[in-house]
Amino acid sequence: MQHIEVRALNKVFGEFHAVKDISFQIERGKLIGLLGPSGGGKTSILRMLAGLETPTSGDIRFHGARVNELPPQERGIGFVFQSYALFKHMTVYDNIAFGLKVKKQPRNVIKERVMYLVELTGLKGFQHRYPHQLSGGQRQRVAFARALAPEPQLLLLDEPFAAIDAKIRAELRTWLKEMIEQLGITSIFVTHDQEEAIEVADEIMIISGGRLEQKGSPWDIYRHPATPFVASFIGESSIVENVGVLRGFELGVLARDCKALIRPEYIEVGKPGEIKLASATMPARVKRLHFRGNEWMVELDAAGTTLMTYRSLEKELLVPEEEVCILVHRAYLFNDESSWIMENPLKVDPMPIHI
Image 1 (tube, rainbow, N blue to C red):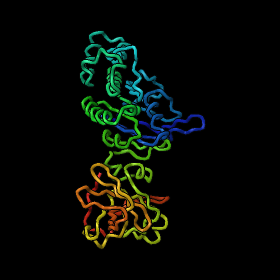
Image 2 (cartoon, helix red, strand yellow):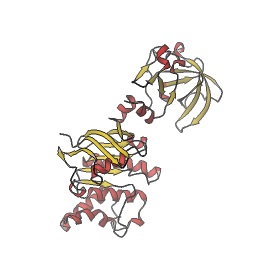
Image 3 (cartoon, rainbow, N blue to C red):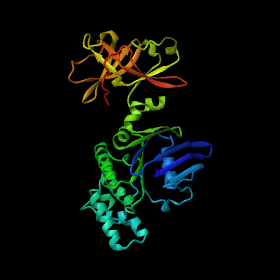
Image 4 (tube, rainbow, N blue to C red):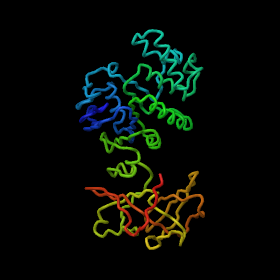
């Protein structure tokens, strides 16, 4: 039996249809990322799971039991907010202990649980401090510990790292994944940060316009996007209106009614003679170069179409306006009816995917 099951979930606010007929299942212990653009319905889904919003229609089931009418405190849920929402007048210890005190747990049980979480979240030595005496990362760890104190069956996180600076955010991502794996608690977090979702989540659910576009592992979604929106939303890409101008993709009639999405790693770029499969290459011109720290991002003009690709720092430097050769290894093609990935038929040896 699935831990979490959502069936045909809808949420309407006045005339705005925020969540549209969404269904999914989540296995126990999985860390799920709800990813998508702002206003797509992610937080509405999270709030309905928590019991903070009532579905307009549809079912929410935990362990097979319908929980639509259960109040939040009876759902066995821990909730971590973007803004920490700590009690400013309470110490770290008392913030973490709050839910246990509400449940009237014995004092010795509370102390044992709080000190365990203080240790787990790396807050040992800070338990007697107040929130204003902590860094942003430490405050968020307190928020995690407080949510975990009552031993919830489901942990919900609404953009938990959004208010934290980039370096600490990266550290907390790793810490969160390790902590959840250690505890084995089913967790769902909302984010609009692709890197965050890909790095942290076991599975990603792409939400857009209130609909579930795709659910799967980060790798599966990246390699096999189910819709043009997913393909364009995940990773970097160029949209080519007329794919027939690219060598190997001259599709005749089909080229007139389909577009192509081409990721940077689908394209190989080199100086004349540098690419082995010369018969599959086409000429291009370097428009701009963007230094990315560990590689160059090369902006190209190929037959009037702008493409982006990567180039290793170990290779000879390209310069703007330089004439180069490119090989497009594959393209994600789509029209109004369908979408598919096409390998360049002129290519012999597959190129490793860069991610």
